[in-house]
Image (cartoon, rainbow, N blue to C red):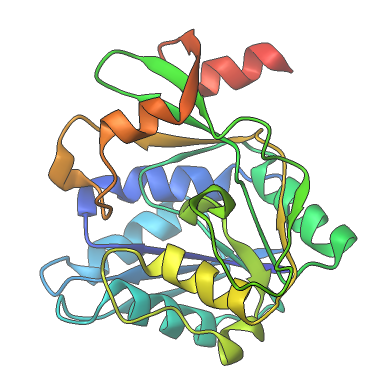
Amino acid sequence: MISVIICTNRGDFLQNILSNFKKQSIKDKELILIVNSSTVNLNNVQQDIEDHHINKYELLQFPDQISLGECLNKGVHAASFEYIGKMDDDDYYSPTYLKETYETLVQTKADVVGKGSFYIYFKRNHELRLYNPKHENLWIVNNGSNQYKSSYFLSGGTLTFKKDVIKRVPFPAVNIGEDSGFQQKCFEQGMKMYSSSKENYAYIRHSQPKHHHSDVTEDLLKRRSVFTAITRSPGGFFKERQ
């Protein structure tokens, strides 16, 4: 049904990766876990995967000098299923996240689906904010001008697409901006892109600036978002909304 691609160079986020994948309600799924580091012990990673009783998986390892974008492309090529879901190693995904994004992709017949409106959880002060409000459940349309706008951006940790998309538009060979570069090329080529609901996902913003593979500042994220709640965890927030 769907292959989940996750790339990491941080062994301390392995438990978050495996927990997010394991709890997804979709049964027919596989994990493509890419370790983008030569120093992480792959035998230990494999043991952790098996301890989580994840039966269908591919474990790949590439040295640090291979870019994040290249790792993602290799992961897509290793996938067994027609649909690809890209998830990040440090974010929050509810148990129904993958079900929602898969069903949205199939029902809309889009080439690429993601979340344009999404929650951001600032760990420093436990603040949850909604980024880019009112940009959910809508098409991202190229009217021929090819002018890609920042408001079109879908969170990189929520990108879901048909496997053959990567043949036309591979992820760029960079470590920062590989997701936005991919989206812009898809937009310019006239692919059908859709922003799904704001639910079931939260981008976790850590207080250490160097933690993120992004040059977006906390000030910018707050300017483009609205306050939602103070909560000990995004998981608790989503449970209360059910």
